[in-house]
Image (cartoon, rainbow, N blue to C red; front, side, top):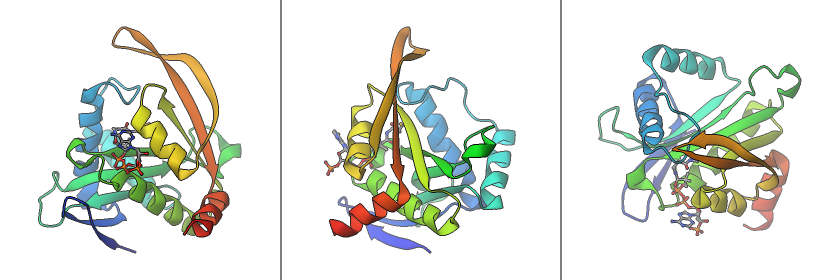
Length: 191
Ligand SMILES: CC(C)(COP(=O)(O)OP(=O)(O)OC[C@H]1O[C@@H](n2cnc3c(N)ncnc32)[C@H](O)[C@@H]1OP(=O)(O)O)[C@@H](O)C(=O)NCCC(=O)NCCS
């Protein structure tokens, strides 16, 4: 189901599941955040073959990617942000767990879009009926992301100290999780 919203800057946005036409925009945003070099523990940009296999996995329907699309702007510049919930790799006994990843394009940050996309992704994940718990990890230096996750009710369950080494410094990794039912109950209570 698509959802139309108006951001505080007056920009209209469509929130929806990603389709093939959104793939280049999603990965352009991802590669731009890789270039920013402070939010993700990744050095290499994603190439075309990886983009294709990622989309095939999404299409299978176990995983999801929701996007904030800017109408009347041509791809790949029409994706303001994206939120994915994907399967853990290798872990067959943890298929009830989804890993959340979120990216908002720099010019759309601080407008409430991160919160809207995560909420939408969790609700859509519930409809897929295959995940009960959502987990994520984040650099301890990413105060904005941590504040967003806390606001949404994610619980900090641990820290992996000096887990990443980038830009000649170590980063601690914060691990967080939330149960979908708890999230939805909490939202209902506070509505
Ligand atoms: C982290 C990120 C997803 C947040 O999305 P966003 O759309 O900018 O955040 P929102 O506008 O929805 O803000 C929601 C909450 O986040 C926190 N937040 C947002 N901007 C903030 C800022 N500049 N300073 C402190 N907290 C901030 C607040 O808790 C805010 O709630 P509030 O508005 O009620 O105070 C986005 O900044 C981003 O994509 N950053 C780069 C990539 C990244 O870090 N991804 C996550 C990797 S773990």
